[in-house]
Image (cartoon, rainbow over all chains, first blue to last red; front, top):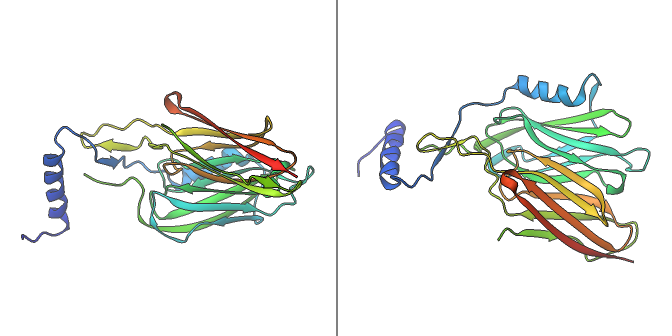
Length: 158
Length: 106
């Protein structure tokens, strides 16, 4: 058994992988382009406009340490009475370092009863995740969580 | 073959807030990955999900490549009357899928 360090291991995998998969392409790599904090800010600005963005009311539940970035459970809940006069119109989730800053937009109404959505997301790197809620009175509230990702989404290398 | 898992309570009391959970099978190819040959794998995701309760929209979501494969969604609604929930997923390459679930409100 020959010994190899990290760089030769990659070469070994590359050689053996392309030998094994000649023709049949199944391994994939990620384009190095990533969103930046500036893109996150401009995405948030596009949503919020000139309105003030306040911290609070929104609770973003996401594990602080994630093993697999391909499927990260996430729950956003917003404190709101959810009546016809005072309800959450929409919930928007953004990230800092995925290839694009958007994760999802969720549109609710007063009939929802409880302003809470849950889904599973992809995170390509350790980064900040931001949830923003738009209320029926037009105000915006936010919460953010820093997440550490050990295995990033879609970074399998050949 | 595409399939969806729907979880809606069969019965509820009028005015109860009920949780709806849906999961559909879809690759959600983000469009940023490359093959060994260096070609970008084209994006193939579900872009929109809608839930209607007896015909009126109660929940809608725009999905992006950052949503995991086999997208799962959980949300809430107030049970007002017996009827059906209709779910619709729309995505790239003309993907469209519908499902429905009944609820009895007492």
